[in-house]
Image 1: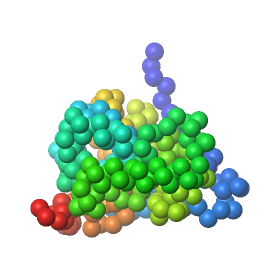
Image 2: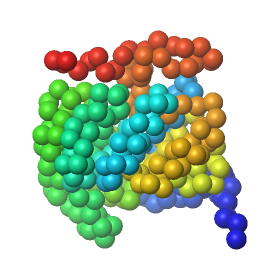
Image 3: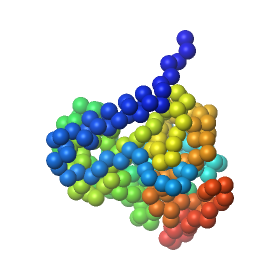
Image 4: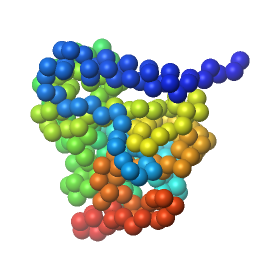
Length: 257
């Protein structure tokens, strides 16, 4: 049986409805929460590649190899317990993430079940973020932490509750949703400039990166959120209108190396 393919219009409509359910409700609009970003404005031929969770260290290594070979950047949203487990098997793997120009955002300590996410209080989210940052400072050391970890946040399952957004406001975090995911790649939906693509560190998404990403991207390149927001965080060269455009070499900013 052939796999049902979503139209681009249906996909965007579904994504918009999901986003509206937690961003545009009347109750939320009365509160001054940070805007949940699902698309980035850019004049460059780039989309943001974001990779969540980071279980499965062997797959993470292969993803990093793929990104390096293709000179792509990404923003990782790792669960702290997953990162600690990866580090046990592949020591300093997240230092490699930093050294190769990728950036890192908050995605909770343990990625609780959806029911628990919906019940987590503002105070609990603040404590969770503080615990997450302590663990990443331990994993990376302060120099690598300062280099790679940005004030980005992604709620588990995209459930940006009022308590989660309140924590983001308190901690100065920018919350990021997504406008494309693995289903986009499976259904041959082309990526567009400024899309935020969500993938996970899984065998399935590694295969999609290898087999489908170049087709979906066409003339676009994968970049980190940081690169799109600030060209100083782009690699040394990115194509622009067919030319190579010089950029700041991100990896040389590590102090003490």
